[in-house]
Length: 206
Image (cartoon, rainbow, N blue to C red):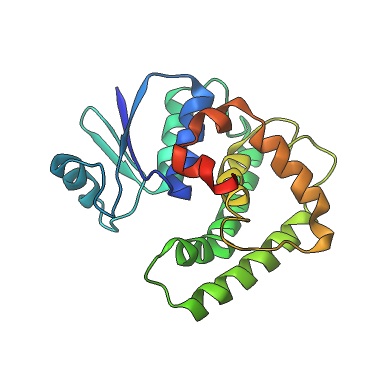
């Protein structure tokens, strides 16, 4: 059975939980809280095997994976239905390129905002930059149901946890981001998103 070592409020862990819930496969979630609440020493030892000390971590038998993109693609290929990556090479390449852009433009600011030890001025800068990047992303939202197509895909998986946390991080989206708000609500209504949330994540919008 797949075991996902997941942070209860970690946006990157949330991404992998969405993928697992999309697949409807059998899996186990082990909650890892770096503040010292919840995990056993054995569970923490598994996570510390990751060279970067980051969540999520996925194990299955003797397989050990880290990096959210690697974890998510493995799950998608291991359980091919419903497919979250396009079936054709061109579509997969375009999706991976978009994911690469998100990792470069959004992830550094997300990590800053999730870091309780980050200085206030650094967090303020991260809020500003993330707001700007999401404002630009709003122009990419078109007439399709989801960001790149009418099918829910890996880019949507990555964006859903980030968009959910926008108010929690104290970020105000520009007035031009109305389409992004509509798109976000569509993501939040998806059953896999609802089922993937922890109590800590639900409380972010209460």
